[in-house]
Image (cartoon, rainbow, N blue to C red; front, side):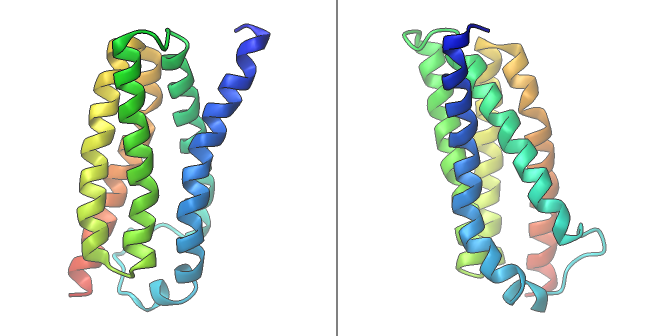
Length: 159
């Protein structure tokens, strides 16, 4: 990696982390209030695990986006892949608003299913540009798969 590329790498990591910051604004208020009143499945992780998991995933997402970007923004497949990346990143932040902000496991479930589909498409588009970038998103889609199951379980237990 060239020294002049480091600001771009940092920029993609910061952009990804920003989605987490936006989501956390809605999450923090509910985690100690509304969320504690919900029936949750036995496999619900402890609250302290979510922060480190998401910080790590956002870091990997930022690195993956950088690896795609460095293949050349002027290329159509790079632009398409990064547009999908931006779309899924926005949906990622939206999920926290739907689930925690609106206090709606149902809206959260709808949002997370759309998010999962957009992550899958992002991985597909990244794979066309950089296989390494695509692989860096695998932990993300696995975590969101688990989160979808968790969201679904919370919805069913509380309806």
